[in-house]
Length: 292
Length: 259
Image (cartoon, each protein chain N blue to C red):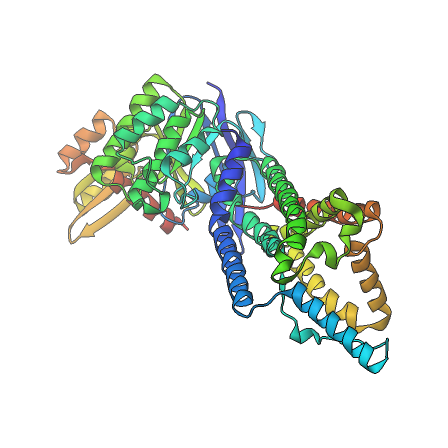
């Protein structure tokens, strides 16, 4: 599969702070990706660089095979920012018409349908919308743009659970009919786990982990039991996080556990369970912090 | 809808409030002036005739034909032409548009190059429209407005009427574009240290230029050439030439402007 976006050793500093530090990633076409990281991890700076909003201090960015030069805005890309910059006195329908002018694959019928799906009043002015409804206008534009590379930055900000699910379901349904590359930037891994195929986990401006979601599910384990047995079991394995409670303890182990490993754990009275992705994500970032 | 139309719509949405406030202020000013003049029975043409008749009588009585009456300027009630008041839009446009339309257009996915070209298009159309309004207003002002109130208009202040209707219109258009380009340059790169230097130089230029005698002549010559030029071609050349320099400067800021 050909690459839609290639970032090689990109850097960006604001004063003495490294917002993005020698970061590399590659997105293939027709896949849904997740970009995960805490607030301030550098996700928005990375996305702004990729879409030509800010310029990297170093490194290379290529979108659809074209190297992005300073000041360029890549074509065939739709970036839905966390904070919308649509004129507050514009009506929703005007914003949609305006957005259509910038996306050659815009589907007006689909946009009209989504107004109903997301319960948006096209006559309402942008400044009259709640935070969640603002997010929905952006999400609608991202979906209706049918852009070969669509990027959503915190797409469910301010949305209730029902609307979040509706957005992810609509995204998946539309993706099934019109496959394209989608990048979802968020800090809520559990919500996107069923949507994305692969995740990039960012911390302090770098990629901490790049993995298929299924792989993470298979490889992340919570092992608990007596401290001595636990220590023996985790030797030579990648321990993401560990805690002790007197004689007992727990460890988050990342890696493939063989049948023998499971048997050994059982024989030593250790319990091995899966880890909820959100917890794994939090522990992984904690580890990243400690490593520094 | 194409990208240029989007830019026009975004510009209109951003300018709407300022335009309505300005139009309302002009309307209130015109109504207030008209009401005061009517209440005081003020008729500038009649006043001028009365003064001329009184001077004639005095000359006859005294036998002094050199006798004249000078009305102190502070006694006169002269108003700015309503069409000229609209020109406040020039700085407003060139301040609000670069500050308030760059992000929305980039957010839609516009490129810096197309955005900047569109912005220049908005300025050019605005300069033409404002020049046209003032040119059409000018005969109306002379023949109708001045029967009940005294006004002054840039066209006569700068002597642009000497070039005829078309000439005055063209002179205004290039000068208005010059003003737009200058303000656009100043407000396109507010984050850039180079922009701060330009601001400082411009702020310092007039007091320094007018306080040093040797420079004062050049400053005066510059403004004479820019505004009171007796050659329309030379005026167009100077205004457009400087505008091009400002446009080039603003582009250098815009092409490196971040979101």
